[in-house]
Amino acid sequence: MEQTQTKKIKEIFPDYKTNSNILDAIVQGLNLIKKSNVLELCIYSEKYIEIKDLWYFEKYLRERFQFENVEIRNII
Image 1 (cartoon, rainbow, N blue to C red):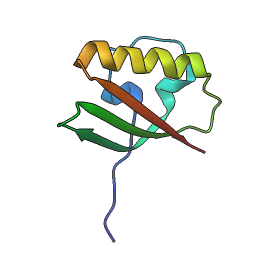
Image 2 (image 1 turned 45 degrees about the vertical axis):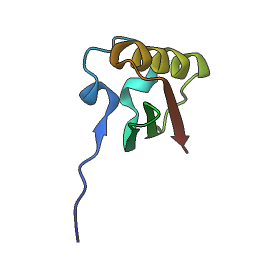
Image 3 (image 1 turned 180 degrees about the horizontal axis):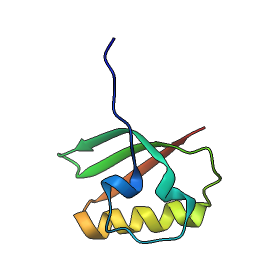
């Protein structure tokens, strides 16, 4: 059986500074669509993540990496 290594947002994006629960969310999938410059991100968190925290994280990703759009799916 293949073992997958999961990482938290704070491990993948160590320069993103916040006190939100989003830092402890586990990234389960990441997809970059080059033609349209879109980043798709699937995350999982046992803690509640406020919508404004998702918005700030999307804004950070758009500004930091110059993505046209960022789509975050929170898997419950």
